Length: 413
Image (tube, rainbow, N blue to C red):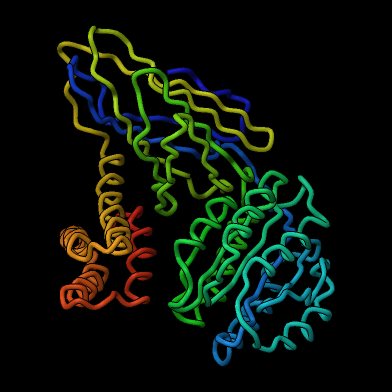
């Protein structure tokens, strides 16, 4: 396969689960693992940040939720540096700029504004998100990590497409979006899609007390980015089709593939020096007629000052070399299979096939028990029990499984 450019601050390595493919008159499945990481000798200084914290202040945020959001916002100030920019936007059925973009050194101006947040009204995420993006855009610069952090505990209705479009447009200007769902009533599919289009992350906050830790970790990750806002273009060549694409580390995520377009482009967000990004590509190779070296994929990674290209090839042979798949790839595939099963369960349930959904979730629970994730397995079985009695799964159980299986990229110890 072609070598990537050596001048880039990151490297891209590719491993396949097979050294060679047999010459067959039927289609074959092949897996490719892409490992993206910073070069060892690279010395990365802290990135300056230009952030907007967009806070849901609808009526459902009353009590412990709004109190903990306020504490998390104050804690955020301690995490940031004096020359970082921060704006705060609150929203219900309309948006309000609580603090316009302000250097964090002006700490006093933040305290009273944060304390003044009072829950009221409904939930319209687009209004808050658009206002947050606008505030970040005012000081957006290649010298900063420009990002919106959205916190919500509710569902938005009728403005999802507007929010997704605004997020996708903002990415073109180097502005990312991460989303944090509090409690059980928010739309996980929507927030996942929003964060994926924004090159950020979606996370589940099961208890209000988690907010401070989750936001602190997100800020640390953004400030340590080696490169920002990466995108990967995957171009399968003749005789090869991309069946599925997954992020396997630092957390698990399925990238939907557009069946009408053979070439796919996916947003990967930023890359830190500490954590590699691992992608798993599931490929289908068409029937072969002769021995040859098959050119399968052309990969193109783009980010700030980063342009990596690689071509993946594999020999087609009458007597292919037999080998065990790389242990790390096998490990990721095992965890992806569990993540995929529970995702299929929710899709089947939404289409009205409760029997199939129960079967998928039960299979996921069996795998989780076998892998040593007993707490997640028990949660899956509780939902299986509910579904077997004709009841709907709980919001808490669904989110615990969806976001819990994402952490399966790290083997249980």
